[in-house]
Image (tube, rainbow, N blue to C red; front, side):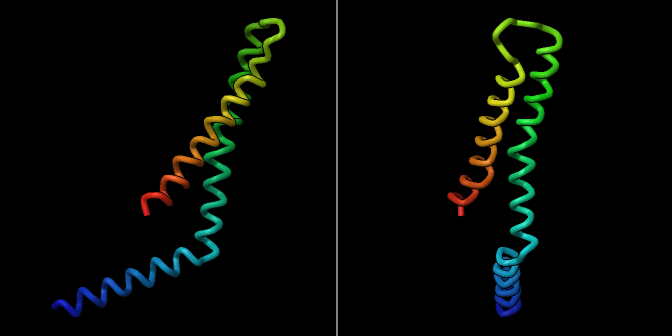
Length: 89
């Protein structure tokens, strides 16, 4: 019975090694970086555009402010998802 579990463990390890080396795994990382980074920037641009349309505050551009805020949030998201994931391994 112990040999059966050892074989299963070996197969799982081989699958993990293959998965990490595959092209699809790399493309998944690239795609998730783009979504995690760009979504807050686009959302910030949209919210800033709405605020600029509603409130003309003189020299303050809400669009640029929220784009920069979205960029900071996106960079933080990438840090949390990828850097901390590597630390846990």
